[in-house]
Length: 208
Image 1 (cartoon, rainbow, N blue to C red):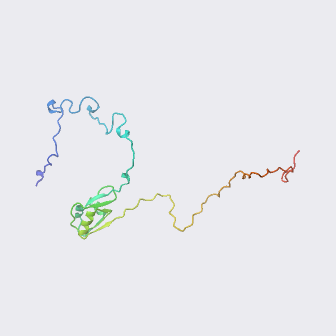
Image 2: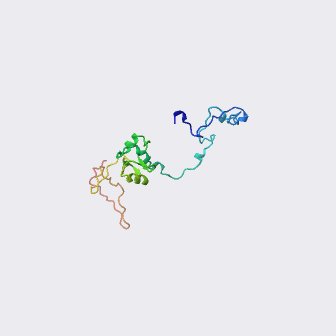
Image 3: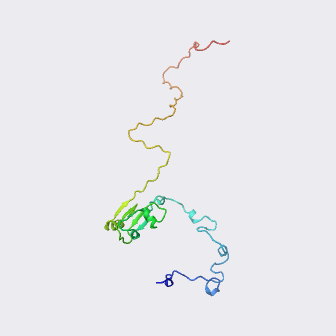
């Protein structure tokens, strides 16, 4: 096969739609744009979901429930067939696969899938393996090593957890304030206290 023998696959290319070539062409007069209005003008584009200014459907529908999409664990899939690019007996880890372009993406976890046939004895390190991939790797004498994903970092500012057996820390605050309430009420049946007519000794001399 030579370069001039290459041709596109049948059905992958289409002829250009010719507009304004008469009514018999099917795209004459308005050239497929319909009548007058916003969509008939050049450069017009209406964003998806716009309904002319009225409340769109996506906002009219109630939002209920919860899903785990934001907390899902996602992997970059790597098939066994792609691992044949490594030499026999090599150790394949995340850095090696990313270096050859076998694992592209922002996700930080890799999963080895069993699509294709493996012809090399490899030591593969990944975050997850499918059952078929593990069986094919171990059949050739290779090994599968799981990489433990690091837990998310704890927020700063919280005190470290106390070990068992340590006494509780004393609070460095002021002592509890005494309650400044009324004296306790006397029980029923007690006579009321009499007021003495004598002046108190602590009182100073009377002024005239």
